[in-house]
Amino acid sequence: MTLAERDHNVIWHPYTQMKTAALPIPIVRGEGAMLYAEDGSSYVDGVASWWVNLHGHAHPYIARKVAEQLQTLEHVIFAGFTHSAAVTFAERLLQILPQGQSRIFYSDNGSTAVEVALKMAIQYWQNLDTPKRKIIAFRDSYHGDTFGAMAVSARSAFTAPFWSYLFEVEFIEVPIPGSEEVTVEQLQTFALNGDVAAFIYEPLVLGTAGMVMYTPEVLDQLLAVCQQHNILAIADEVMTGFGRTGRLFASDYLQHKPDMVTMSKGLTGGTMALGATSCNEKIYEAFLSDDKLKTLFHGHSYTGNPVACAAGLASMDLLLLDNTQGDIERISQQHAAFSERIKELPKVKQVRQQGTILAVEFEADGTSYFNKLGDTLYSFALEQGVILRPLGNIIYVIPPYCITNEQLGLIYETIMGMQQIITGTRHFEPPTQTTLHD
Ligand SMILES: *Cc1c(COP(=O)(O)O)cnc(C)c1O
Image (cartoon, rainbow, N blue to C red; front, side):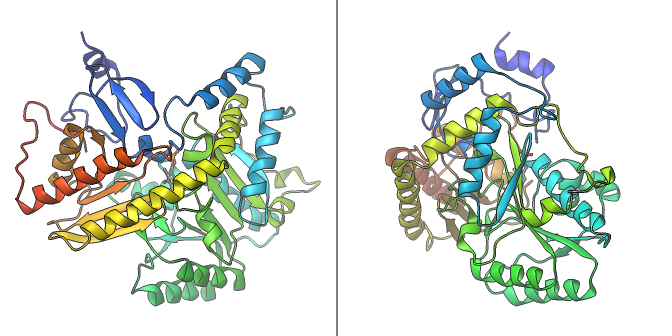
């Protein structure tokens, strides 16, 4: 039996219809932006392995730091105990986080980082004896797959089976260029009606919605409304953090700073599962009390895991190198040049870019995640030796920062090929014997 067949017998994959999905591709090794498969084929990782990888696969420096940590202290209970990796990482995160953040709460992934932020926000108001119920979010947002995170995410096909179990959230439109005023008015109306605990948002780029982008100017307006009406602002930087948008955090483009920031994905450079929620001193202080009931009763078995924190520290060392900052700039410029090349071509509806994130939206009937075009484009990319996971008719690139211009070039040519398939000037027959991934 091949590894893929053994997998098929025992594994249930994420976001995968197991009945119809093609057998997964066994990867045996990674290096830089490349992934190498069991059958000898290789792939440029154009999606940074689900948006997590910053410095390339199996990075020797991160590997060494993780190995050293593993041989010193692999884990210790984080209630009543501490260790150098967690403290140093928190100190260094606070140095680079948007101004005003003063405390780090560790968890395991992006969804739990969001859960922690929501619980902090809700309990904050209760601890002050002025409970507030409402949470505001963007209509097309994505904040994770656990229940609280689902509740503040779009009421989409992803969450449909659970709608009746999700707590109520007030949704406002995404303020895409041209419809900014509507969103600001909606937020103002909710703010005036009162009872709003917090506003949670993906700053500048809504990832899962299809790399939907909006300007820092309108977000600043929204945050000004929050500040004026005492609404806690939660920046979900799980995807946008650590250089993705061209600056260390998307919030760095803004005048108004958030009360809380959620992080994961690039937090460890894509090496280990780790989540973090930061907050400002105002929130932290609301939990300080002689009354034990004002404690934040939240924690995970692996809170502050030393190995994950060591990976985070090593990744931050690499991220702050001039070289890496130069790479981020270089990728942004390459993306911008490619945008110019493709944006006027037939069937290209819109090209969006923010730093290292590039999205090409094709015209298509039905723009849903589930449309067949995405399947065709996905397998076409694989055939070209590139991993790109279309969100329906939207193809995006979010590469590791170490990607070479040559590898980027292969990605761009693949997207040009997709444009030709869509316009019918290039023929591509997706493999038939196996059905494809969502
Ligand atoms: C991916 C993502 C999450 C969820 O993170 P997981 O680690 O997958 O649980 C939350 N928020 C945003 C903005 C994300 O992109």
